[in-house]
Length: 395
Ligand code: FEO
Image (cartoon, rainbow, N blue to C red; front, top):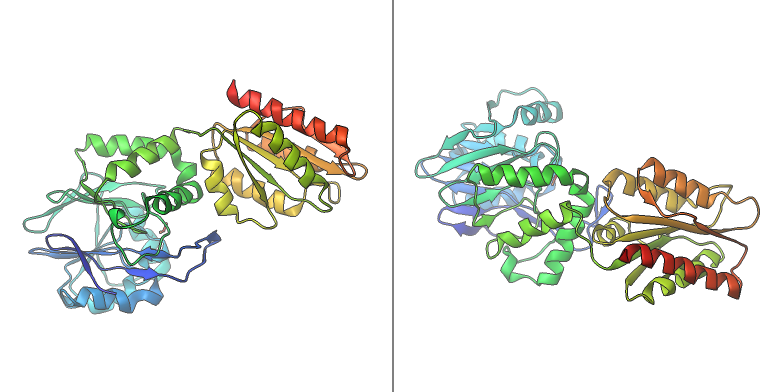
């Protein structure tokens, strides 16, 4: 691995993690990168570090250009450990450097890495740092991704370094958006948004407006994960605005689990009932599906239909876990519906609906339940149920 220059004297010096498959529960089937950037001017600046096991790669990439002792500033845009856990190592070798962060950034770094004798410079939105021929401008961005998060903007080069925002968990040997498959790129960008940033949709819209008012008009967006948007930064900004405003496709997602295939047969029949109206449907049996991948599919779906057999008077554990995960991500503007099978007593559909309503999701009722296995007539009822969902989607 080696450093890559993205503008005169502005370098990517991060690390590619090809093999990570579980990023705190998020399935990263294509790995990820931890992007750090080096700017050399009258002052030399490192923007963010990398996850601790990759500190040697970061160091070697920096040392292709300068020695660690030459660093004047280390910008810590975000405290989370994938970006900060090499900071202590870097600071042990960069004895002249000042750590630049938000106030909450300093608090978080101190809590994680202990009291230390680092020079800190606390910055707020609008503060600038003159490096020589270049100026860094800072924008606080709380909750994108943590309360401490901030963006760094290289004014003269018009490069925005927004840390987690606009990222993708995508390991590649290429560093730029125009060098990779566009479908893969947007698939990973959508999955990243759905699983990391979706709860903050309103904040994202406001932050993009605020940044624009501050005169930040980036030609390049260099996030902390994945490739750098140099050819078409507007593409990811527009996508974020669309996702944050709840833009959907003509698509429904059915998430279900099954014991003896009764609920599964219902799911297939409901799917047929929706598909007849020209609407795409995607089905996921949750015992075999990754939650983060399903959330990506829900991101632009108009309807989400949740099915479960009754187990011990409630829903199946995979469905309960998934609803808990989805509730935290707060997808907005979807039509939700539920269905399920039972042997006696029932309870799954009631439990699903209670969960959906607690999350303040818009639930289409009545739900559909059948006992034991669906008869031919009951399969027809499932198709009609799907038809009602489709009509609501089209209304
Ligand atoms: Fe990539 Fe919130 O850390």
